[in-house]
Image 1 (spheres, helix red, strand yellow):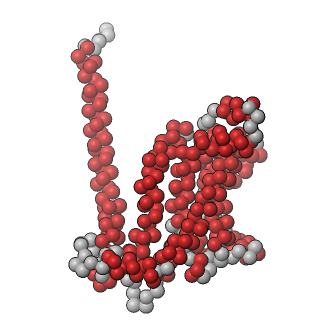
Image 2 (cartoon, rainbow, N blue to C red):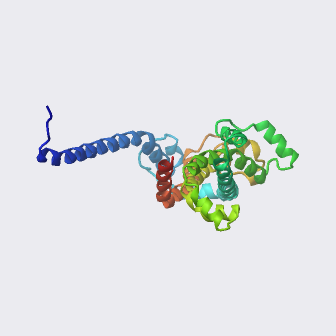
Length: 294
């Protein structure tokens, strides 16, 4: 015995499903907002509001408004005494070339791994991808940089940073390329394009979304690196922003001046926030396309 739905019931079914999806979406975003308020919003507010307080008031680490505003004084002290622009310059000198080199060479290597027959090339791919999990060997790295007379320099630190981050881009991009049709490359080869021309004219435009996402992740990772910068850089003239923040926070013999530390943290994070606000659409687009390709 079979039952059939009436036309009225059939018409109501999509509406019911749509309402359920809407309620589910509202519930999901409500829960995410409630989760984000104590874990994201409150620390951010604590940092911002205490960066505008006087030293004694900021030491309490409260979330209330400043009783005596010291916004200009705190941020001026960070610029004049905290070596902010020196750290910003050095961070840019490391981050920008590192990201460009890693994205370019990593995507080239990923193209080779994705199109090579399974065999020896896959062994090198797994070795490259293993660097995502294994931390860099610090002592051999310092010894190697010393032998190259690059120990303590920004160039040596940038080389180490590029080498240790290459595996992440290779791992991220190889799977993306394997999901792309091979006919595009074959058509370029038939037209007489060389491998380099095929990469820059065909592959690179197609890889732009996933490379953009990888580049943003690399910028965040390299920009905030403290541990390896502390071990590999020498001298205040080579200090990056995390190192200038550390030196500034520990320079006082009386105690940590939390108002100045919070102001320095805000200024250190500000370039990354501006980059995200400008590029958030491209990041979301790249994540969506990468998920569809994967």
